[in-house]
Length: 179
Length: 206
Image (cartoon, rainbow over all chains, first blue to last red):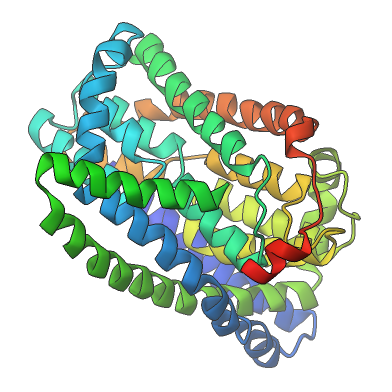
C-alpha cells in the first residue's frame, strides 16, 4: 500500500469516526440526534453573516498587496539577509506569504515540488515550512470577526512572533535532521 | 491595530503598484478578492453548519464533557480565566482535538464557537481577552500529529521516504507551541497591551 492511499484512508477514517461515530454514540446515550444536529447547525448561517465583512476587508487588502508585487519587492530586499541566517532562497517567498495567504504559499510549494521533485531536500523543507504555520492574518480577521472583537491587543504581535519562531525552527530543525 | 495595518496594506499596494506598473492588476485584485472572500465564507458556512450540528450532538451525549475533563489540567493551565465547565472550554477542547488530528475543516467552526463563547465571559466587550490572544497564538503554531497533506504532496511527486518529515515537523511545531505560550503570557502583562474599555468616541466610529 502506498503512503498516499494510506494517509488518505487514515484521514477519511478520522472524519467518518467523528461524523458517524459521534451521532452513533449519541444515539446510544438516548440523544435525539437529528434534532440536536439541526439545533447546532442553525448557528452556521448567523456566523456567516458575522464573519463576511471581516473576511472581505482582510482578503481584499491581502489580494491588492499581492497583485502590486509587494511580496516580490520584500523578497528581493530581505533575501541577502535571510540567506545569511541559513534560509534557502527558494523558501523565502513561502515564509513571507504563508501568514497572509495559504493558496499563494501553496502555489509556490507546488511549483517547487514540480521543478525539484518530491525527493529533494528543498521540497521536504518547503512542505514543512508551509505546514508549521497558519494563515495568521486571515485567522485573526475571521476569529475576531466572529466574536465581534475590535481591539486586538497583543494578538497580532504574538501570532506573528509565533509564525517567525515556527518558520525558523522548521528550517533549522529540518536542515539538522534531514540534510 | 487592524485599522492601521489594513490601511497600510491598501496604501502600500497602490504605492508599490505605481512603482511596478501593476495598478491594473491591483484594481482587478479588488473585485477578485471580494468575490473570493464571499465564496470562501459561503463554503465555510456549509461545513460550519455541519460540524456545529455534530458538536451539538456530542454536547448532548456528554462527549464534550469527557474531552474537556481529560484535557482539564492542560486547559486550566493555558486558559486560567475560563471556568472549567464553561461551554468555551468545550469548544476550545474540540478545536484543539480537531487541529491535532489534522481535521482543519472541523477545527474552524469549533474555534469560531470558542471565540463567541469567550466573548460572553469578556469584562470589556469588543476588547480581546488574554484567553483569546493565547488561543490564537496557539492556533498559529498549527500543531498536528501527522502532517497528512504534506506527506501526500511529497509522495505524489516522487519522494521515497515522505514520512521523514514527521520528526522535524513535530519538533518545530513544538517549538512554535512553546513560543506561543511564552510570548502570549509575556505580552499580556505589558502595559501597552492592557485591556481598556472601548471609549464612547470609538463606539460611534464603529
